[in-house]
Length: 100
Image (cartoon, rainbow, N blue to C red; front, top):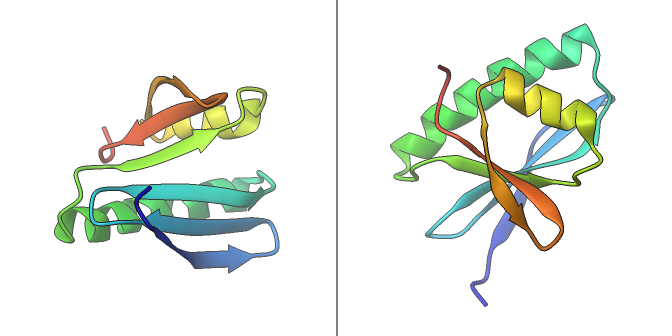
């Protein structure tokens, strides 16, 4: 198994964004998300900034995996233009390649 590192890159009372990475991939984790208008707008801005950093660092995309019953996060990922790729290990996997 490839060793990975995980860091918290954004933390507020209603939202936390963690980044897990190796030399091959970058994965977004949302361990805490309470969707409000403010967190929605913050999330969009943070993901766009993060995408710029990630692609500059040489990654192709940002991936994330969520529980299939998490419809709130699924809608959020859909609104920012993330593409659902399928499922793996019981989670829905999404890929983000920048704003459409």
